[in-house]
Image (cartoon, rainbow, N blue to C red):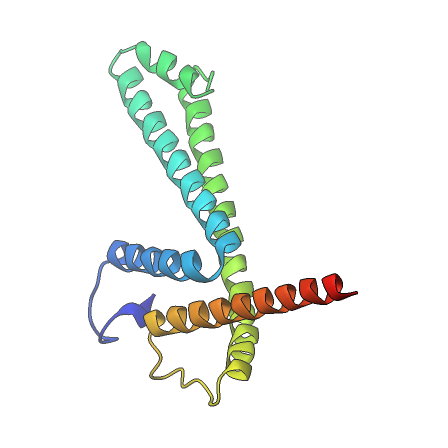
Length: 171
């Protein structure tokens, strides 16, 4: 996250850095790895839903403490049948644990993606007449290079398949 700052000593809110990181991941995965992007999007959605449930639990707990029994009805609508504060807290902790597990899974995927990146870099460099200078490469240029190589490969595959079809017709 600190690499997202213009200056390392700069004070930037964690939320802003997190939002920026998510935006960068979306931009990268959307154009380079559709499967990872779909998985990333599903996990973000799960986390958002669970955070909303936690907020509902906290709000319902406050309602109940203020004597509003409809807090129990709202809890039941999200699948919580608890009638005691300890059990409601337990449900909140359970959901917080779910979030941590999903985030852990996402971090593991990011680590695996890092290894895949260097494998991809090697394949990209095989398609170029020069090495890629990662110090000067921007994310936008990288994504566009990958798109261009993919399009070139798809065109080559189409030509190959067309030639293969012509050879079968000649026989």
